[in-house]
Each structure stands twice: as C-alpha cells, then as structure tokens.
Length: 181
Image (cartoon, rainbow, N blue to C red):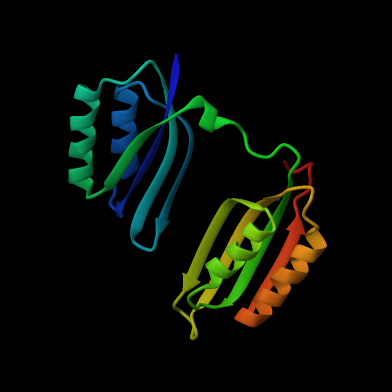
C-alpha cells in the first residue's frame, strides 16, 4: 500500500542540502512526487510530497534525518498524509494569475488574501519578492488562484484594483488560458 508524507524543512542556505536530503530519502525508498525548494534571501526552504510502498522504518530513518537536520541547521517536520486529504481540489474552478507591484509595506499579502478568501478563491501558488536596492523597497507578489464558478471575475478584479489603490500598489489580473494548463 502506498503511503504519502509531507516534508517541510528550512534553515540558512548551505551547499549540499538538496543532495544530502534526497540521498537520505532515496536510501529509505521515498519517492518525491511533488516538491518546491526555494532560497529566500540566505535561507533555504523545502516542501515535498513523498510516497513509498508500506510504512517507513522509523528506527532507521528518524536518526538519519535528525543527523541531517543538525548538520545543516534545518528545522524539519515529516507528517503522514491520508489518501482522503489528497483529493484534487478544484473541478469546475477557473485559474487566474494576479500580480502586485509597488512599495513594500506590512499588510499587502493579508489584504489581498482577505479579498480572495471572501470571494471563495483558493490560492494555489503565491510568491513574493522584495528588493532593498531601491528606496522605498520594491515589492512584487505573484499569485495563481482558482475561482469557483459562482465568483464574478470582473467584480473581483474591480475589488482588487480598489484595494491596490488603497495600498498604493499596482494590481493586474489575468485568466490563465486552458491551453496552457
């Protein structure tokens, strides 16, 4: 029986993190189904959806992964994910991309997320970047969202544009072409 696990890890970036982590996973027969690994300034974050046939050997894997965590200064969490939790989200949803740019300030992500939440949207990808090379610091946010059929995309776009104006940022909304998916 296939078992799935969610692995989360993060710490200050160092060479060898990906190689050594994936070496330990391979040794214990984990398959990396989906992953996202990213450097945020000088930190490195890992999110992986893993699978393996049968349960893993806790006595063998846990000490090895603790040694990896200590060697690389990574905080790490591994949890089981039930098949029921793996049900694909969406179905009838339409995909949109939203980009935000402007001067960095607290509350941008929360303000946009609040509007999307109230509209019934599901955020499926979110990336933020800030640059301290210019004053005021430049801020960029890119989102991919699923909108349910009941949500009017034009009304949501108008609300996002009003919120962007209030925040002093530029907002752009585009429907993702089905052919791209």
